[in-house]
Length: 244
Image 1 (tube, helix red, strand yellow):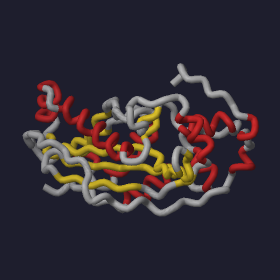
Image 2 (cartoon, helix red, strand yellow):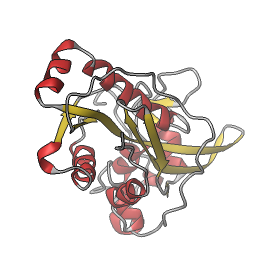
Image 3 (cartoon, helix red, strand yellow):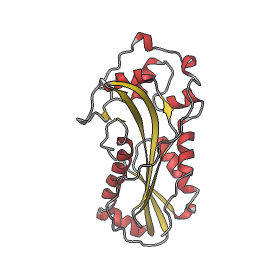
Image 4 (cartoon, helix red, strand yellow):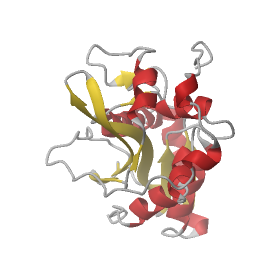
């Protein structure tokens, strides 16, 4: 997002110590009754090996998902396919777009794996189960008219077994953010008319105002709990549909 230059607002500038341990994690959002469904896939099983599809170019997400499946699948039967897939919900998803982005990434990855090249690779490596997992951060907003009254950062985690058609998803605990930084992020515009797919993340705006703060793990500074610890906790509570 180098095309967008963030101008620091003096009254919002803070030090790391001023923001450190100022927030606490809040409970996860309740599961929705209705959520996007995956189209049926026809991945022919060729054995008892497992292909884990990870649709991300984020090294930290890749690591966490890989580690999760290493705890579930014998090392000699585990294979990973890392694919860079567009979420189609912008750099900063808001509200339900977080979950939608996770589904979009997995669907896009499964589309690619249906190509003959990958089908042949699955046969070569005796793949019997094709399963994917995605992690998508998003901000849940509440408004009073046009004014944002609450902004909470959550992680949407989606897992889908494309061989059996079974899925699960969860929402992690959340971390509140000062709405003032979100308001600035939203001035950079959106990819959609409903203003749910922002061009610039609120984390980048926050980090621009706090020297030394990392835009991808500001949560760990303000709560004392690293972001991926929170996501790992949510992941551990999921039902991973590996059964046939």
